[in-house]
Length: 244
Image (cartoon, helix red, strand yellow):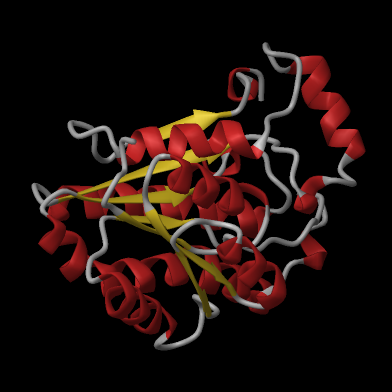
């Protein structure tokens, strides 16, 4: 049980990749904190199904939400070892439709995908340092590495999250490591009707299929436990990044 005795917080974990991460963390022996902004019933159900879990509702884009999440974690478990910044939002807009973009759209996506991740990390850093071997894993995207993705604002926000990852890794060592995972197309409730893109991935990606939340979860937690790795972004994309 590689995470026995450890406490893992995963934002945006009521379904999809985030849910897979908390379930795998619990399987590896961790006590876990489940979070969601709006899917309260689903989040509580996930936490209730795990052996030692806490659910905390909160929108990471809201002022004070990160501090409240960390405070609830410490009150219940007394420590924090791993933070996975998984909460994210997007809008599906073909890249050529520049007229559909707006400053408000950019701000909304950045507020969750970048500022939210920073705010929770900032609140968590003292506890992560106290753990002696704290780890942050940011959920980026292949869209942050290549000129692809559900929309330009989404792709730019994930590129910013990857750069934030490297910058934080430079200044938070040796007590805290910061890395990122960059999934390609993963089969989640978010992407269930993306049939055209799924067909493209199945045709073009070297592994000829889309990914599963469980596959992303394994890489996420392996990276969280990789004691000599920091400032890295690992693509989990079936090789799609090689052809786009």
